[in-house]
Image 1 (tube, rainbow, N blue to C red):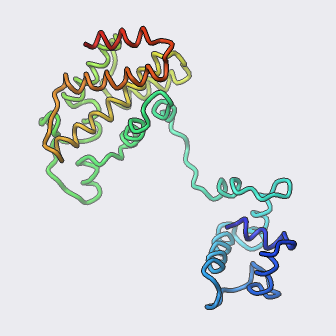
Image 2 (cartoon, rainbow, N blue to C red; image 1 turned 60 degrees about the vertical axis):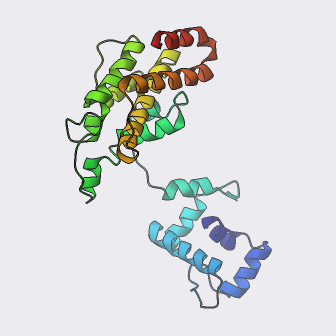
Image 3 (tube, rainbow, N blue to C red; image 1 turned 180 degrees about the vertical axis):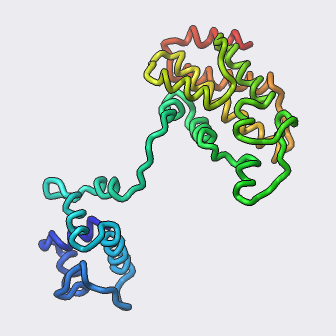
Length: 258
């Protein structure tokens, strides 16, 4: 929309600009003209964006300067205006650990929510005013919090420990955020085994969350052994797809899991 405002102020050779200048602006300026009842919805929307732009910049002169800052080589760059208007947040350190091409996208998405404490667990829903019976459906021994679910819960801890045994990794912690910190320190490592570990981490979080929902909403349960075997199979297939040159080692892991 900022691009159209810029075109009205700068590109007089356009038929669209000439028409709007004559029938809407009428000798005034796009920055001072007001909306009329007979104006089209698209023109009214354009004026609303103009007001937002003036408010954001702090005045008409500042808004004009803001528009011109998005022009490069005589062409308005929409990406520059988007970058100016969008909310900016500091990048979290674990972003590349979860959002990597090795893991399965749906696993990445659920894991990113878990890392930000945004999964709708009982304690999270309670903070939003929805109070439910607070207990963990996986171990049935504690309240359900995201800290408990990944991986302090006896059930989820068994899943993660089983994966670590499968990968032949010893002396590791059983906490999602500690695992993220550990992987973040090695995020530049390109070895396929680092990709395997990250794939296992996101697959474990996704599968534990899926099992939790299955027990609540479908009244169906899987044992630790069945769920662990399922994760190992999914991870192995994904790794074969991403790292086909290491197929012998990956198939060896899958046979070891059997």
